[in-house]
Image 1 (cartoon, rainbow, N blue to C red):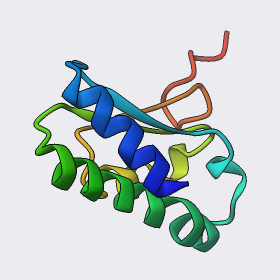
Image 2: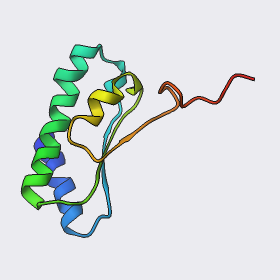
Image 3: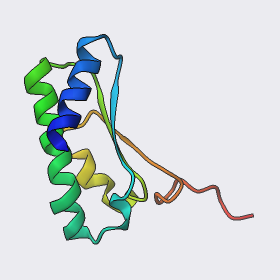
Image 4: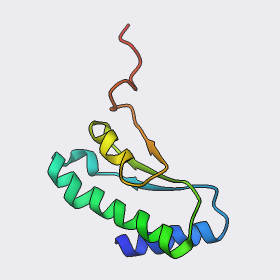
Length: 96
């Protein structure tokens, strides 16, 4: 799957995408070490592949649904931006 995503995103970059996003729908349901092993490791592999294959300077955004608890780990994975959802600490509106 990581190889297919790498090829797909690289083609998007080659054809002029202004930015690309790796979207992990289920990562937020994993325990911390499972997330690192079964999601983030592959995200890092995809990032490295996109940069290597396409020579991309195109920004790569990483979004893990429900992954706000790992925002710092995600930010260190080599991406250019981290997408957050409503479950991330500080992203919810104040209680009324």
